[in-house]
Length: 196
Image 1 (tube, rainbow, N blue to C red):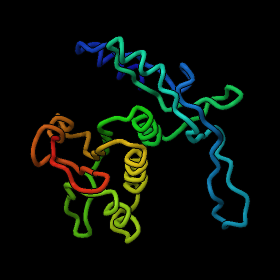
Image 2: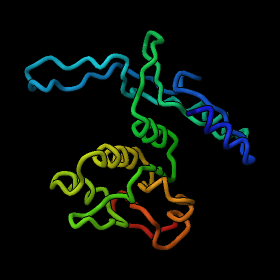
Image 3: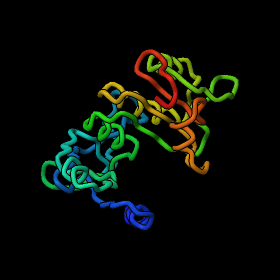
């Protein structure tokens, strides 16, 4: 997938480079253990070569950016002994965005965005409202890890997070450059003006 994305960017006039978190020591990782379904007293579950981010070292990204390249990062991190760990892509995106002090993090999914209790799209939320919606069960299922990654990015200094349906043609442009947007925008505290 990484090389396909790189090829498409290059085909349409960009200058893309594919890399993993192992390249340039970009993503330091450690083994991730899942909580045991038997309860807190049981030993955690070993998921094999699944990892979690320890640190993002963005020097290689800065070098690529400085030379006009678009980095396309596969979510693989490197352990202390050089071992490769597979990491959730949204988690890596949030951590990289935070390390770069990115203006925005855009997460593409296969639903319109965050939905309210009545099934309507929530256009704009604050981080506090988002956390409350997880606690009260409004945000459920696969959307929970997406918004949690968004909250992580905001905590690390990213100014806005957008969650939108990547199946919609031109969805990123419609979200960023229209007043109403088409997905959900999450802000650190006070809602900002869309497109700003």
